[in-house]
Amino acid sequence: MTSRITLPVKLAMLGLVPLSAIAGLSTWRVLDHFAEADTLTAQADEVRRVDQIGRIIDGVDDEIQTLNEIGATDEVLAAQRARVDSALDELLDDPNGESEATLQLVAEFRGRVDELRSAIPASPSAYRLSGAATGRYVFDHGDGGVDAMTPEALAIFAATEEFGAFTDSLRDSNRFNDDLFRDGGIAADVSTLQLFDRLAERLDTERQIYVEMASLPASVRTDDVLAAGREVGRSTEFWNDAVDELGADDMLEAFADVRSSDAAAEVEATRALMAGLEPGQPLSVSASGIEDAFVDLDTQISSARSSLSFETIATVDTIRSTAVRSAYITMALAALFVGVAALLIYLLYVSIRRPLRRVTQRSIDVATVQLPAAVATLRDDADADLPEIEPIEVTSRDEIGQLVEAFNTMSATSLELAGEQAIARRSVGDMFMNLGRRNQKLLNRLLRNLDQLQRDEREPNALQALYEIDHLTTRMRRNAESLLILAGAE
Image (cartoon, rainbow, N blue to C red; front, side):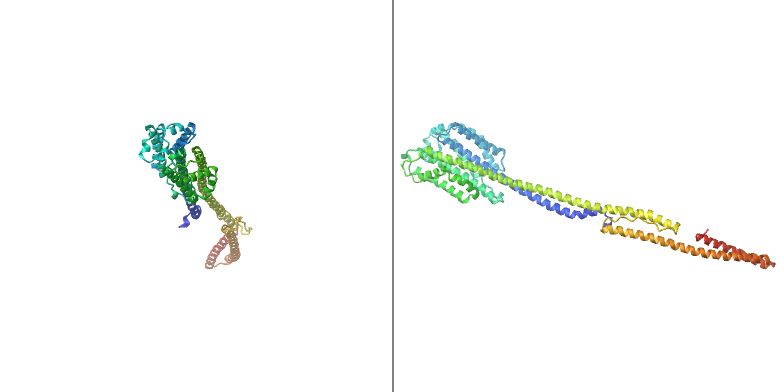
């Protein structure tokens, strides 16, 4: 069965096994790298998604904070609103795998944000004078607080409350999917970013309440008011502790400068002051001082969070790029290995085909031209020198070289055998020639004697017998001459 298969096909079949193994292993590695790249892409999208949502929440909170901020200008508010719009549009244009429910929530808020803003004064000072500052309502949960608001203030307050409802809903929907992350360090970093967002949100609420408490006359700071301040302080401390206990070590180290800043120290001092404040007791700090410390701390937290978020995204992108690069490198190496293997098989085929073709052509030439010519020469002239047949050059010591040596030996042996046969034929011919010439001489003598007897014989019957003997002897002489001719004599 295999004897009918050509040499190229046999070599191809021989190389098919290692080539298939290389291709299979390479394909598996490439698919593994691409699968890892897809996972890392999902991780990068998740990090960007969390970062986008965090920036939207932070921006919306800062917009309301700017409205309540003492000394904030109209330009600052306009810039903050532009930042919120940019963050909303960025998420809607590039969702990064965000859920449909969250995208619908953001799209609905984006469609209504201009209408809500139109109900709110465009100037922070006008907003505070309207009586709709969110901190005012925190201290009076009864109907009286709402009833005391003018319809205009109530409409402004309702509009700002929708901002808060939107961020609350966004926080609830922004669940971090840590199942996507194989690297626990990156998952911990993203979780820490969300802890920073929660801490910033609590600090913003704490700021609003403390500023409002500082703005109220001492006589109005009742037990209920002070209890609200202590409650918000405990909530902030809870998230501070959560950051310390659950935050990633590398991020906490980067966040350490923020927590040891003067603004952080002032905020801690304000929290301790509010926690120990008694009803009717005057404050030693002003509302503007409290707000400046909180705003400064919030700015530092936002800056640190943005920097850490950028580093996290860059880390994931780097790992993903490495995985993709590894996949392409594996593909290139696999192609190189397959190419080298195919080239080696081809070179092996050429190294076998060329000497075999040379041996085949020389063999045909020796068998059909040189050896017959040498035999013919020896046949025509037995005394001629033994002809020479040019041997095939041996260029290797492998099986092909051994085959060439065997063929050269066979050719030389065949030529020697032809020479021996020629010598043998010549010996036989010489023997027949000697025998024929001896017979010829004897028959010639016999004929001469018969001629003499015929001349002397007178009796007719005897003479007739002599003539018959002469005839037979003549025929025998002719046979002897034929034998000489066959032996090569003239």
